[in-house]
Picture 1 (cartoon, rainbow, N blue to C red):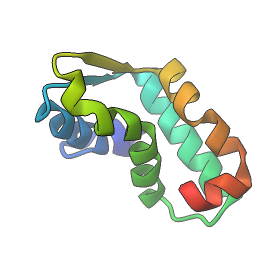
Picture 2: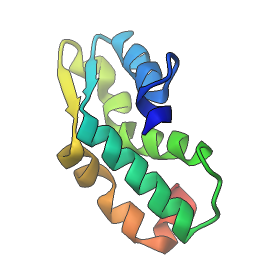
Picture 3: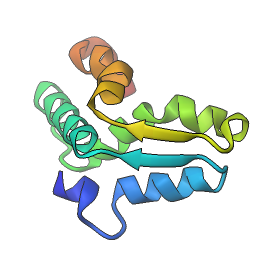
Length: 103
């Protein structure tokens, strides 16, 4: 969680800045960051443990749809909370075969 939310150039800050270039505001709640960290840890445990590098692939998958549609979502605000994280990633994190290829 500290890597995701407490460093000046954290992944959450990087994705906020990236999507802001398209006019999309992204906010990460504490429970959303906790959910991201939990899923990254679960996938690391189930597959090859690549440590904090797993956070990048999890974050990319989490925001894949938003990133792809960002141009059409200009002016929107997205809250990345635990419910959003679960909706986007829960199935992938629990399916070991799919995780192996996606994450």
